[in-house]
Amino acid sequence: MTGIVARRFLWLVLTLWAVFTVTFFLMRAVPGGPFSTERKLPEITERAIAAKYRLDDPLLSQYRDHLGAALRGDLGPSFSQLDYRVGAVIAEGLPKSLLLGGVSLLLALFLGGMAGWASALRPRSLLDTFVMGTSSLGLALPNFVIASLLVMGVAFPLSAIPVAGWGGARHLILPSLCLSLPYAASIARLLRTGLLEACSEDWFRTARAKGWSRGEALRRHALRPGSIAVVSYLGPAAAGILTGSLVIEQVFAIPGVGSHFVQAALDRDYPLAMGVVLLYSLLVGTFNLVADLAVLAIDPRGANASGGAE
Amino acid sequence: MKPLEGPARAARSAGRSPNARALGRLMGRRTTRLALLFLAGLVLISAAAPLLPLASPAETHPEWALAPPGAGDDGAPTALCGRDALGRDLLSRIVWGARISLLTAFAASFVSLAIGVTWGAMAAWVGGWVDELMMRIVDLLFSIPFIFLVIFLGTLARGWGFTGTAANLVVFLVTLGLAYWLTMARVVHGQVVVWRGRESVQAARALGARRGAILVRHLLPNLVPVVIVTLTLTIPRILLVEAFLSYLGLGVQAPHVSWGILARDAVEVLTPIATPWWLVLFPSLAIVTTLSVLQYLGDAVRDAWSPKESY
Image (cartoon, rainbow over all chains, first blue to last red):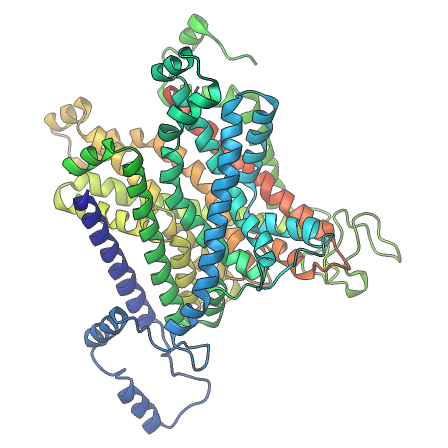
């Protein structure tokens, strides 16, 4: 168990290092440094700036300095947001994005879990057909389409639900719905498949033969093996929700990391963009690690399989 | 046409290659034929867009701004899907948008195919530590949230001065392709590893065939099924990502139209007072229908080429 955690953690560090290295050198390869402007500065000033920020140092020693600074959590000044360092911009947006993402993930789990459970309880019933039909629609709907449909169909008619902005819990309703629906659809399908698969096992038939109701047997015996696929899907789902928040934060004018990232990309604010790429690599990596550990907790048999063999 | 069962089916499939049989299984389903028909129609319409009796997608008519679908009053020509905030004909924009969206999806998928097949096949064929290194790189890239890297690369590309509309489009295609070759590389790698151990390959080697000849004659043909399956599953993903990025203003740029741009245009003019529903509805319908059809085809192709897993 500790071996797996250690290996996965090392892998995460390696990934972050690779992302840093690749983005750093790509960034340096782009013509026009951070201080090149339309206005031509006197050559002596340019040299002074270059000396101050050590732009004339060999690339490798610049790389070493920046890597050291990044390890201390300092990603340099933002190119587009005056007086802000990258760390400060991220620190300002991250709580909002994490709150939105967290709420969306919980909502996806709740909605998807309920729907999947209900359709596994009565497979091929009207409800099951409805749930499966809706979920295949939900899978095909990109979240920006869901967003405009919800804004038009829900937020405009109901004045209690705000169209955009950030403030109270009411502001979270629409964005988290948009973000969670596609993942709720996937979770519903995965849970249904997992539960139905468990239903065809001998031990499930035995439980039923003991006189348990289908619901009881599902809850006490099938839920655990049936939810493995859902739990291992949580890693990719979290990554998808973070990605989706790029669009959703734009649509609903939420000042989170996603909006900052899109703005940074439009403004060519390389350090900020790089900082967000690093941050999201870290988040996604951590989340995948947690999801994998959760799968191991549910089904400890996997620990030996993946821990023993290379 | 009803699918043949039992001996009749066996008799028909005797003497046909696995690929031909898979194609037969695929085309034997009516929904698949319908989906293909839809796709062919879409490709045909978007390819023939300049020849169709449509208004130009860039032609603005401020006086008819936000005209609803149907025959226009005050002398405006009929706009079947209505007009946008600048009075441009929405139907024409959807058709021209289909050109860019489909082109991006298909072209970027082929970029990913080229990179993925080369990378995966090469790694598996060379073997040893090179294989290990190449596939670890794929693993590494897999654990990065890729859309962020695509956006970052696009930003850098603009920094390099690829800002002309055509150049921009090409850069965009290549970045998308660069981002989505990983699955292809893994799948192809797995397949080559399986096949290089087969007796047919060993026999060819024993007979003195050169490595290159074995690769071309014995391995590549066996890659066709997995490559087709992965490709058809990649196309809708890239179509979605294109719409996503264009929606954010980071994909296809202004004079070009794509479905993502149309969806974004719609959101920008939505207000509680005036809801031009047609601007939301028609582009969304185009995106959702095409995505569903492509995803369905992807699944159908996968099932046809791996009959054991379909039930």
